[in-house]
Length: 411
Image 1 (spheres, rainbow, N blue to C red):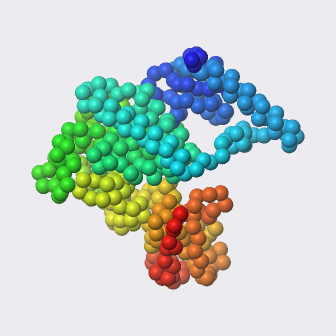
Image 2: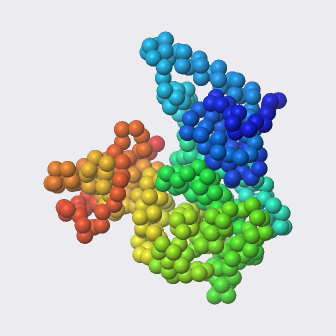
Image 3: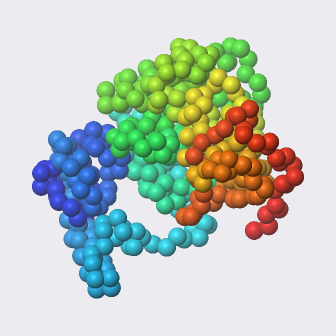
């Protein structure tokens, strides 16, 4: 049985295991609710919190012993203490096989399905949402993204068309948290964006399933009905005063467009908040890569290519940052690399989790290179995509991609 103890923020020390916080979960300064406190910056953030902090005494003692043992071993071997960051790295487990990672990701998603279904039911019936359950889901998703991101994002693509609304909410939550962390946003904002992803489509509970799951094209009247879901969702969320304004904003405006042609308020450009622009990208990407009653899922690279081609639909810079966050780019895009070279993104066949490049120009040397292919697997030592270049701005002729067809993958 866990030994839990509530203390004031001033009593918290490094090495304690934080089990939770008293009060509203989105008022505390972290995106996660259960973690070992090892960072002095985190300690300073926690000292600003005004509520009680719940400590797991047993885990704190076990963690303290493990840290002292690891530091002692490091001093014996190297003659000097290791830094806290290195300690965490040295103590982390070796990566497990992809299949095991996907099983773990599937467990998180299954739990997310139950949480979102229950949350939607609570909101529809006018009950306050379960802060503890929602907090736990966002924490679990964030933890999976720390060491299992590719498996989690891959498993999320295989959702049943009959569970689409609920699992779509889990997927958008995941993509929002992933993008927010890539953008370097603060912990509290990351947490609120995860909640916004979970709740962005809650207004669809007011739309009949016969319309949402219709296999054919919607009638004009049905389309008007579906387009009421942002306002229906906000009306439901307003009944719970604890819901952050950021989540309400994303619910209302995730169908606005950069060029002002979206709905419900025809906002455009910087008039759309960053959170709502993020929501628009994550929402559309997951919708395109999911099986629906009226269409089959597109591949991630096809979805990104289509989204990139929709002039005026999205914030183009933010869409590129989204691509960076999932480490996938559409074939035909010109990208600048950290090595100061220019490359063309190639079709990568069935290996959807890796980006295949054709490197053909060096900015550092100011000259064309003999084209060579490279694959970015997201591993240490890999080059990295840092920006994009318009075709008309290419400093050298772009090689023909058809001369470099994808290699057949058999494994």
